[in-house]
Length: 301
Ligand code: GLU
Image (tube, rainbow, N blue to C red):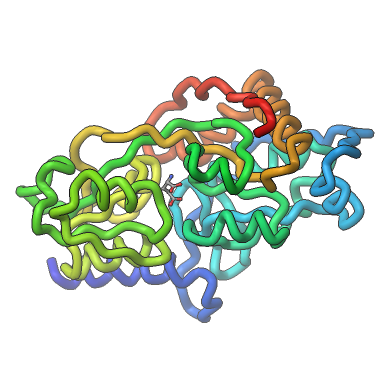
């Protein structure tokens, strides 16, 4: 049992360390390439009112912020440096719709706590990585979408009996990512939980497997992926206890880009690419494709 747990921890450590480029880490499994949609690059597309788009166009590619250690959503293969997952597909779909070859996207891993700064200082053109739209963040960045609706959940060890929902967290060590909405919710609504933060959820999961923490909390979509990697060791418990609509982060003042991203999402949902992308990525975790949430084309603020 302990050996299995250690092996599982090592698998996740490899995931967490995808950026370290260490030789010998087992490559993480990406979705079957054959089933992924082929996004058609919109010929002659122009978005002159967007300074972000103009910059990307002259560069010949978008620079997109993403996650690299979230199974089925955003994963980086440590051997090849290739990113895969649902969020990555959404980024490709948008890039093609905005007239730039999705195969040329340069992905950069940005942790939850650093997303707003990365968009504000122009380090990335847009961000796709389990990024919840909310009013606080809207003061700092713009959001296209939402393109998916997640909800906060709890991941525990398979033999855990005491924790079945957020009401059971008093005195328990709970791990989440710094700067995330799940972290803030536990801090505010469940102050008796012994909350710890790391930069990434994969470090939290490692700590769970090695008994340093009792639960990991974040979006169900993320937790289901970790549980699927080591199903004998981990389980997701209870019902989702928040709404986490995923948006595409853009620089706050670039409304032209934000609305073009909304158009790109709407088109991909209509022509079947969204569902195809879901089925080949997040769908592999066993949850059938939901209906995407309504896109919120909010006025410039
Ligand atoms: N969706 C939540 C958030 O944006 C949690 C996932 C994440 O940290 O990326 O904060």
